[in-house]
Structure formats: C-alpha cells, structure tokens
Amino acid sequence: MKRLVILGGGTAGTMAANRLRRRLDPGDWKISVVDKSEIHYYQPGHLFVPFGIYRPQDVVKPRRRFIPDGVDLIFGEIAQVVPAENRVLLTDGQELPYDYLIIATGTSPRPDQTPGMAETEWRKSVHEFYTLEGATALGERLADWDGGRMLVQIVDMPIKCPVAPLEFTFLADAFFAERGIRDRVDLTLVTPLEGAFTKPIASKHLGSILGERGVRIEGDFVVERIDPDRKTVVSYDGREIPFDLLVTVPLHMGADYLAASGLGDELNYVPVDKCTLLSKAYANIFAIGDASDIPTSKAGSVAHFSLELFEDNFVSHVRGRAMTRPFDGHANCFIESGHGKGLLIDFNYDTEPLPGKYPLPGIGPFSLLRETEANHWGKMMFRWVYWNLLLPGKPMPLEPLMSMAGKEVEVLP
Amino acid sequence: MALATIAGTQVHVDDEGFLTEYDEWTEGLAQVLAAQIAIELTEPHWKAIHFLREDFKQHGETATIRRITTVGGIPTKDLFTLFPKQPAKKMAYIAGLPKPRGCV
Image (cartoon, rainbow over all chains, first blue to last red; front, side, top):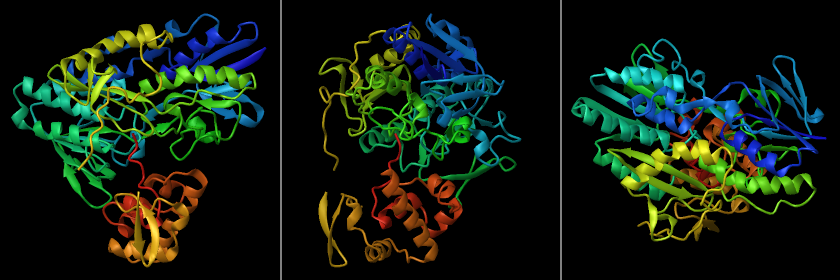
C-alpha cells in the first residue's frame, strides 16, 4: 500500500485530493489530507465582505464536505516534515509516514513581519482584508467611517491574488461614491512596484482607470515600518505618508513548518520545477498552489490550471515515467472594478496580460483588459463554480494552457 | 535584444539597457554601468553585487531585496543608502542581471 500525504486542504489540496483519488487505485494507494481548520474559506469572497456585498457566512463551508470518500482527513497542526525519513510530524505527536508528499499549505499574510503593524492601531485604524476576521473588522470600520485619508498599501510581492489591492481600491471608490462621501476621501495606492501592476500593458490600463477615479499612486514605496502613534507609514528611503485609515496587504509567507523542515526559501516557498511542480531537492515531494515558488500569480486559477496537468504528471511520475505535460504559468483573474463592472486578465510565464476576448476568440463572453458588465457577472458566478466544479475537480470548458487566440498584440510606444 | 558598446566592449542588452548575457559581465563593466547611474562602487556595493551574481548563478533568478537581506545578510536600509530610490533595479543593472521580475 503506497501512502500519499497532502498537506493543506485549501483550494489546491482539495482539488488534488479529488483528482488523484479518481486516478489512484484505492487498493494500492492510501490518501490523507492534513489541515488545521475545519472551515474551508472561499478566499476570493473576502474582498467583498468589507463593503457588505458578501456577509461572512457567504464565504465559508465545512472543509470535510469537499474531501472525497476514500480520503482520510486529519485535523492537526504540522510541526515538521522530515524529508530524509519520509515522515510528517504533527504538533499533537502524530506521525504520518509517506511515500509521496504534496505540499499545499499556501501562503498567509504576516502582519507580524512589519514593525508597528500589528500593534496598538491593529484593527482600529490599521486593517487588512485577506483574512475573514480582518475583512469583517474592516467592514465594521467602513460602515460608519465619514472620510479622511485612506491608504491601500502593499508591503511586498508576491502576494495572494496580486490584483486584489486594485480591486479593493476600485470597490472603495465606488462604495464612497454611492454613500455620497467620495469627495471627503483622499484615496492613495501605496506600492513597492513602479506603477499599478507588475506587467507593463496591464499596468498602463489599470493605472489609467485609477487615475480616472481620482486615486493617486505612490510607487517604489518599500515600507520600513508603520508608526501607530503618528499614524504614518515610513519607507526605507525616508518617505512618510500619514493616514486616517490604512488598509494594508501584509507581507505574505509560506507556512513556518517549511522553514523548520529545510524545505522553504527566504519566504518559506518550496523551490520546484516550474513546469512539473516537483521539488528541486526531493523526488517524492511536490508543492502545488500558492506554496511553491513558481514565478506566476499566487491565485486559484493558477492552482486550477496547473493541477489539470499535474494530475497526469503525478500519475506518470509515480509509475516511473517521464512527466510529459509541462505547465506554462497560465493565470486568469477577474478584476472587479466597481459600479457593476469588471476586467479580466489572462497570461502566463512568457506572455503578459493583453486585451482581447476570452475564452472564445472574438466572441468572449468575457473581455480581456476592458471593463464590462459580463466580466463582473463572471466574477460573481465564480463562487458557485468554485464550490461545485473547481474543488471537486469537475471538467470546466477552459484550456489549462494559455492560448494566444483572441488576444490583441499591441506594440508599446 | 540589441548590441551596445560599453567601455569598448560589445554586449547584449535589453531595451532598458540591462545586460542579457550572464557571461558578458565583468567587474570593469560594472564600474562603467554604475557610473552611468551616478553610483561609485565601494566595498559594500561590491558585497551586494557579488551576492547577486553568485545567487543568480545558483538559482537562475535575480534576488529580491528581501532575499539579499535575509540570505545575503545586508540590511535593507543599507541597500537603500548604497543604491538610492530603486535598489533592486539598480543592483541588477550594475550586476548585469535581468531586472528583478516585479512578481506577478
């Protein structure tokens, strides 16, 4: 009997459990999933909670419901992996031996990593929306906030869902406009990047939308610390920006047990081959979803596209065959832009987001890099798709590899 | 990709002037590249540049500021003093490495 242990039962871990349970003979393979929490969070929905678009109960379901029969779900905290002995140790003393290990413990915001952040002003005038607890607290703050200086600030890249801070900014602009207080809010995006986004063409499009909405961008801002007494963010090059309300995206890191196990890089991400997701150090360890160091977005769409290929690769690998379905870094993100509209971007390791139509060339129904109502409805429908198609690993009419069909290639001046 | 002549040597550069061939870089070239962005290389500068070169050789990626600090042991504050305003970009430029990917 071979043992496959999957660490983490979030988006990627749950998809892997469902897909691999169907592919691996239950007589030959025992599959276990380890997670510390009984709740599965629909993380794309956290963005909507501060604005009252979703309620907290709209984004949670029991984790067990999405783990298939024939997979052992273990609730516990991971203490360490001992790769030399093929064992996982839990903090309660349990030991899980494995033949193959899949690391899917994702990435988490770490407010403790920036001096002054998680201190006296935390959840008062300093907020985040990546956790449900944080998004809920921010919603309570926004409900009666009557304006002032608001910063949406990113500590460092990479972050989970790199478009989320932009979406938050668009939604905040619309939220204040609808409440009739937009003129009383000074809204600034503070980012370590040069502009609105990482890739030039998308950055230009998104930056101009921010400009139209009266949002200023403070770029190349690498935060050194937050001064909670003076309500100011301070950069390494000495710039200081005061705030009345700071919405920060804290530094993101992989799980700490990966550092303790010698499996992580400086941010606890597992170095893997970017085409197969196989660990660079161990031939029986893979890292999927946000937990790996692959150079593309940390996003559910990446987990989804990569796992369609990973499923075949994993089965080949355990049978001693070559892995023949390389992943291209395909990412696909809806960008909610407020007022019932949204954008969509589609890109991979080599091709930046371009304008066009998706998934059907020339038809859509979704438009790339343009604000449309159809994109907004795609985003809102996605919650149903997530729970009912994505997590169970059911077929979706989207190709795992990025396609140039439907994309308009423009030349930057 | 284009060819540029820097300090009498032909090298391959991208459209922003970053060297694209790891092995075309020399310390002499680094001094010229640094001078172009008004930086005079001193011992602490070289420590950062050499870390970047070595790390790239091993991992195939230009190290981020965070990596230079946590793995290379050079405080972030110092990097901002040595290479003002945009240290990640300036260090990569001088070290003859690709611009650090903004992350995605």
